[in-house]
Amino acid sequence: MMKEKDDFYIGYVDQVSPGTKKLLKRFVMFALVVLLGMAAIFGLTQNKLSNSAFDFGIDTAVTGTYHEQPYPMLRVQTEENTFKSIVLLGFGKLGPNSYLNKIRSEVDQLSGSTLRIEGELVYYNGKTLLQLTSDEKVSLVERANGRELPKANLVVSDMELSGEIIDPKCYFGVMKPGKGKIHRSCAVLCIAGGIPPVLATTDENNISEYYMITDSQGKAINQDILPYVGKPSLVKGTVVKLEDWYQLRINTEDIKDLDSPSKVY
Image (cartoon, rainbow, N blue to C red):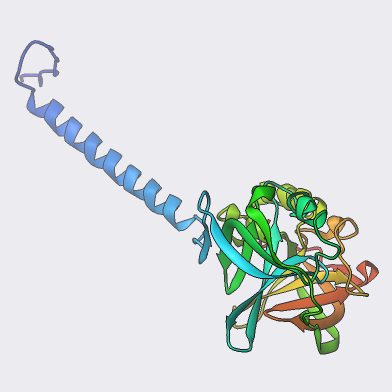
């Protein structure tokens, strides 16, 4: 009985034995299946892109009435009797105050003044933010002259909301997506630097709403809120509406840690 000859590969010979061809075909098919499977798993496990936009490197000029209720904002008229409060941000992990000091020195009262600001816009779920990059891009259009500032209207005097406290700059689009454990540390630094804390909530219909957080008197609250950033919590307070923003006025002692995994960070 003749024994089957073993394949022996010789590099300078053009022909490849049938056995070697068969083995190579199997290997290539197996490798393709593995690669396609890995690609599918990688794609399915990625976070979905949010409907946010960040105009990095593109300056847009926005003119409106400056106010701090309690965070720096620019009140812009979008149509007749309709206004929008654009949240002002600084570059990096800071609020906008360092870019407003120069214009502050030129007027007796900045709140209520009309300003023209060139900056980088951030859009997300109907909210708009504006990142300032230079004090030279902030100019005075009209001094405060007693014009009416936006008023906070009471919505609910006693309300409990579950959600997570985030920083709107990274979460809304500057770091897209601004999610994951590494972003929680970033959020803490951003809020500590003067960016407003926001409670992100989602109802049973998967509809998201955002509440800018203040203390019980409606004043800015940055440092005291830091221990609760990125932790699923039950937050109790008074809800008011300021233009297109809800605000949640709270006492930090009333925040209850739900002790559950974060859906954001």
